[in-house]
Length: 102
Image (tube, rainbow, N blue to C red; front, side, top):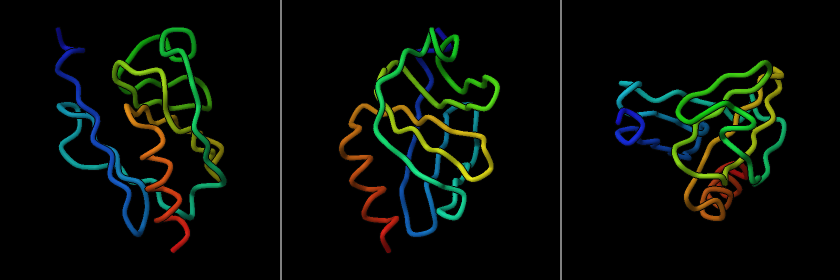
């Protein structure tokens, strides 16, 4: 039942996108605006693309997902792309749009 205790917290603020997967992280992980090349909403398959839920890594990609199939795909300037799962993708994209434009 560990999977049912996972909770992803996402905050979008002036200097970037902050992610914390509770109870695995005690503090937020930041993706700064300078590290983001582009981003877009996306439908995905956690099992097919990332072999499960939680914090998942496959070559060149990192996913933060908990029980959803919608998220925001972030292409980073470092080449290590990140998928952030969200129950409300439109709200997340709007928050990123507004903060990224500042």
